[in-house]
Structures are given as C-alpha cells and as structure tokens.
Length: 263
Image (cartoon, rainbow, N blue to C red; front, side, top):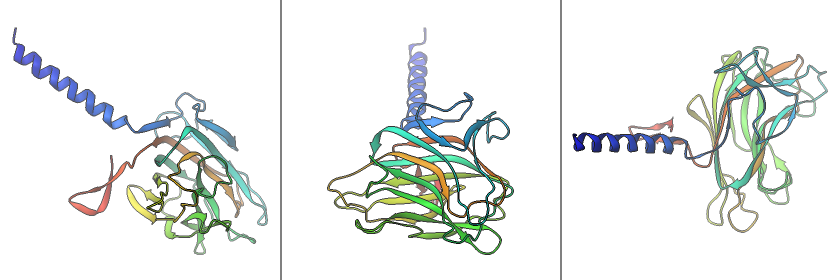
C-alpha cells in the first residue's frame, strides 16, 4: 500500500473541502426561489410572488409588480426580510431584471423610488440606511442615490450621494447583477455604503451615522419598495439568486486597482 499516495490524496481532499467551506462561510441567508415558495427569512411581501414566467437561473424568481396608476398616484411593491440578528456589515448580492417597459416618470410631488432599506431594530432607527432611484433625463432613465438622516434631528434625506446611469435604456429588458455593501458606523469611523452594477463599483458613500454610542448593525430591511413616481403601465421587476453575506464580498483586484471582483 502506498501510504504517501493516500496521504497526498487525504491532504488534497481536506484542502478542497476547506476551500469549498470558505466560499460559503459568509452566507447568512440565501434564496434562489427554486422551492417555489419564500425562504423563511422573508417577511411581508407586497405585490410580490414567486413566479415561474421568468428567472435568471432555474425555473423560479421573485416577481414584484407595480400596478399602472395615474400620474399623481404612487406605487408599491417590496420584499421584507429578517436576518435574525444584526450584522455590523452585510453584502447583499442578487440578480435584478429591469422590465422592458421601464419608465421613470416625472411625477408631481416627488419621483424618488426606493431601492433598499436596512435597519437594526425598528423602521424609525436613526441609523437606518438605504438608496433610491432618481429620475434622470427625459426618456425615463434612473440614477441612484443614498438615503439616510444627515443629522439625528432630520428626516431621511434622499439622493445624498448620487450616481447617474444606474438604469439606462440599455438596461431595460435585461438582468443586472447587483451587490450592495454596507458597514455600520462606529465611534471612530463613518458607515460605508457601496453599490455595484454588473461587477463595477457604481456608488460609494461614507455616511456619518453614529448617532448611538458603540457599533450598530443591520438585521431588517427590504428590497425595492415605495415608488413615489408610480408607473403608468403595470411594471414587473424580477429578483433571483439572493445572498446575504456578513462580510465584504467585493475586493480590489491587485493588478487592476480601479476594478473589483466578486469573491
């Protein structure tokens, strides 16, 4: 019996197992919707179903449908989640299908539409953070901007830091790979919010959100949400392959300091 061969193979098996484990070590919740129903961490769903008419991979995806409404009416569709405990940092990765009939309207009274929100205990948390779509140009495209309280005694400001061309006419009718990274503020450092579109950093912000002593975290949140602009036609977004990681899954490529890769 060749003991050295067995030893080498045992080491190789252990290394492969360790590498496989490390890839998924940071995932705290995930859902590819292939069960045909909601995973346990999802909470309330508004105008959302697990649907089989379109998916990024497999046979199912979450479908969020905004009904068609008059120009002075808002829209609403969202997925809420509860991760069980607060996390000081989170990476949220998912595929987002932009509807072929997507049009960001110029509506009276505001046209900012929510993209995501995160908070620790209640929706009224001072350190709640998020981002929203903002109307761009005249053809119905959208920029994206961060939303949070700039001061503890203010309400939530929208589009604090704004980045253009998040949803363009080139994106409609296609899947977009999205990563949202957030890190809670501490007594010594501001929060971090970064949004990636198709593997590239699109928005980078560092909000001063340390309104409570110590380090906070994020347990609750939602994807998409209230649309102040509303939509003229029934407009359905799809979300697939959702993953929540308790670390930063985006890292700078050492040979290309201005580019990022997904770990």
